[in-house]
Every structure is written in structure tokens, then in C-alpha cells.
Image (cartoon, rainbow, N blue to C red):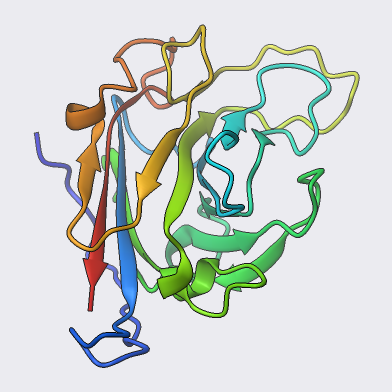
Length: 218
């Protein structure tokens, strides 16, 4: 079933001539939940650009809580939160291995904000915005590790004991992440990878049931 969206989008400009040898690349990312995108909950797409395919973003599942939502290796993330400006989406860089810091980079280059009954987040990232030294532009990024995370609580108090519900890639007993080969034309989804089952979290507004990532070259 197609989700219904509010018609709100921002579009950025290509940083290189379309189709040329140094053409910019972008990721079109979509995540769908079984219920609706709940303004009281927290939704993240966590990205790891450290060049190590053996580590990647994971959900925080228990104490110590750290930043309250993400663990493992994360260099960037997009958060959807209705308190954020310009449509509720924000792109952040994490500058520390402990994942406690964050630097706001602005909104994605374009996005669709879900309406009151919307169940899907969709946005586009320019790979140039995901570089980390010694990379100088997005064309030097070859692989990324990515996870989709939803939670009703983001605890940072070490004494917090719950209750808390969360979902991420995996079946609820595992904490998986996907590895993306950043090749123009690449398209992967839950249908092709089968990483995320339905019904592995009680609340439908947190139950991630589908996702997709497309690599575009401008």
C-alpha cells in the first residue's frame, strides 16, 4: 500500500556536471513502519563510513545506554524528529568513537515529510556530505554500513531500566546492519535482502517492515 505524504520537499543542487566522470552520487533512502510515523517516537538511519566492513551501526538494547539509541560504528545519521527545522529531518556527523557527540550538518538535499497518517520516511543524501578524512569527495566512498533504528525512548541516564521498545534490522534477537556497495544504479531493499521481518516489536509505530536504498549518479 502506498503511503500518503504531505507535499513538502527541499531539493539541493548537484556538485558536478550530470553524468560526467566526476558526477556526484546520492543515496535515496526509504523506511516504512507498520503503523504511522509517530511524532512522540524517534527514528534514525545510521551510517558508517569508516571503511571497515566488519563493523557498523547497531541499536542500543540495554545499559550502558551511551547516546540512548545507537551503538557500534556510526559516522553519520539522519534523524526524523518533528522538533527539527525544515521538515523534521536532520543530518548529523558523529565526531567521536564513543558516539556521544554530534554535529548538525543540515537537512538532507531533499525529503518528503509524512502527514498525520504517513508511515514512510523518504529522503536523499549527497555522498559529499558523508565524507570523512582523508576522503575529499563522495566519489571516494566505496562502501557504507547502514542500519534503520526506531525507539520510543532515548535513555541517557545510566540508571534507566525501562520499559523501552525498539526495532532495527534483524529479528529482535539479533542486531544486524547492511553493507552497501555504493555503485551507481545499485538498488537494495528488504525484498532483496530479507533483513527485517514484520512483527518483531509490539508497537506498530516502531515496527520497521520495509526499507530501500538507491544509489543515483547525477
